[in-house]
Image (cartoon, rainbow, N blue to C red; front, side, top):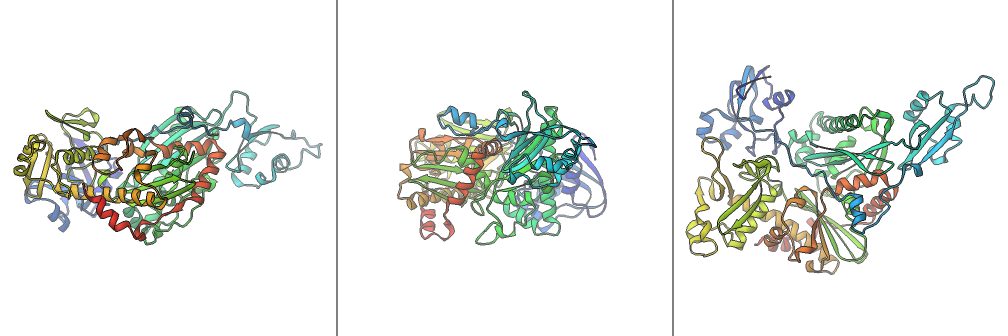
Length: 616
């Protein structure tokens, strides 16, 4: 690949998909629709030896765009020769939530828990005989000597441990470390100031986060976010599940995630100058599909009713067994699962957020394409998932995008007009992300520009209302229907940013599903949503939305705003807790096993509540 005046030039064989060529050259392109050509987010100006426009492009692009050489990158193949790509969508740097409801913060908040277990409590010093020919005890195998000094449950001869023991053949004093109920590490005898490390992962559909943790103190010493490389196959889980069913698709998805985690782990260790033997354990939480793909388990059953996972239990093994490279002597643990769309991430968030610390009604919501909802009250725990669709992710909106540079992330309606917050300090926005969407819809509902049924008023109708009139000039009729204009853009460079009637309908579907799930979960435990003592919002979207906007648009029930609290990347915090605390691991196992999984798609009241909740 060469670049000249911001134009990417590639010399490609016949039949090469342009997206694959760009990715191989280090210029990945996000494909929210999985490369089906339905989202239109991969527009670029393309020329040279390329295939003609596909029927999908003819539908998605205007005649003027096609005449100007605009194409959908996911639809273009090389006919053999040089291909030039201009105005390619920027890869973007996602705003990834790394900070979470960490164990230390939980303790500061008065929610004490045995989150941290000093390494010394899990380590045992072993006396190994000096190697001598004339000592009968010394010629016992090193493994026999080790096995005689550890509990029977830890004495199984695992190949990575045998290899490690062989490398320490001449050491007369070793330290053995137990972790997750397994013998996890053998090292030369640790000194008082020595420590070992672990890495906790939060595996999201869009983003990955890794945390390097000092196992002696329980402190996070390094952290790194990364985009999920599987996104090239589609932004949503169903696209990934479909790809897993293609020839070598599962292998591709598995290797993409394990490769990304391996590289991230190596970078985290290198930043601290750690030899690989110092990293002895990994934990990972994520949604059910991501955990299946991480372990190389076909996720087909997750895409078919009744959406059942292949397994529910936490898994423990060796990192190298699942494809994590560079750490041959490290153990790996993945968290337990509640159901097909209630994964280890939800379980970890519930434990980190102390959802069950008492019997007061407490609700945890992780808002996303599949909203995960857990309600704890009266000694019970209900768990359900709501198919909210992609609206809150931003990418499928008319002018939507993820929370990355150029996205409108917040909108404030003032007497003087709109105040926009744009990620990255841009003055002209490229689009709008989920948190900006919630602010916009809430403001339009409050101004009466969106009516109770979700219809966007015309400019003439808005002029008749004192509250709506100041915004009437932003209500426009376009070739695709009515829109509310957030920003005029920059002529010749950046198109306007609009909220369309279709976008509002998508929001109605999303908020209807989430709100109906909340109502039904409360109903099952004999509660009104207003009885909730606390609503915990987990994840990036939950952290960045304004509670007032979420209540105004009806996404959340009308509780006093002080009862709504964002807890950041609680799933990541839970992964850290599992890494340093056997008690946290056990609590996650118990929570996943005892949660009552509420199936909304078969619930008698869901359809009625869903229709009611769609209204503004």
